[in-house]
Image (cartoon, rainbow, N blue to C red; front, side):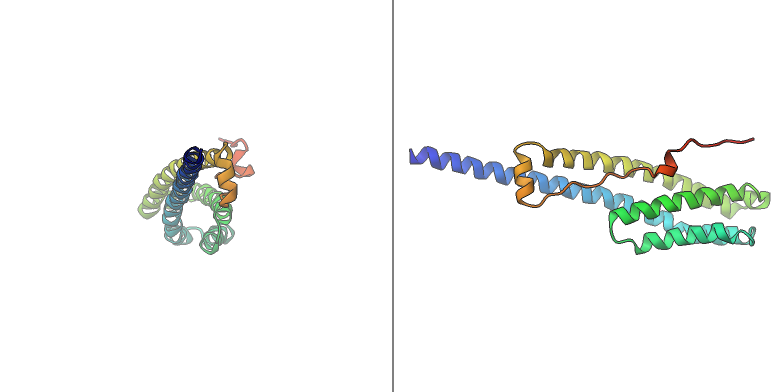
Length: 181
């Protein structure tokens, strides 16, 4: 009888250790995938000063748009949590959209080689950021599922595993795009 009880206890300990280790691996994947987004966003925010300087020469009186871009970049740099970074990213996306719309008003700026190169580099980065966001959300889904299913949810609650937030589009990004000719 003691052997059976010992065997059951040993099995429970092994299941707990295995589940715990699996949850740690999944949580670390979430952190890693967030770090990959962070790397791409950092590249994007490093490009911004060059872009702003290029535009400044052509659009001196458009300071409000340029200030919005710089403000969004500074908010990202000072953000401490993924949620704050996501919010700053949303503001940067809006500010960059206004900046590129502004560029349409300045034919000389649109023809500027530096501006075109920066815009192309930023476009490539946006594609990488979109992929990284998708990967992050897929990883968060796997992690959140893992901590919610039985028996892992018991172990997750005992060891303090918490759900991670998804990278979501801001409400302004969900609105229909108006195209005017």
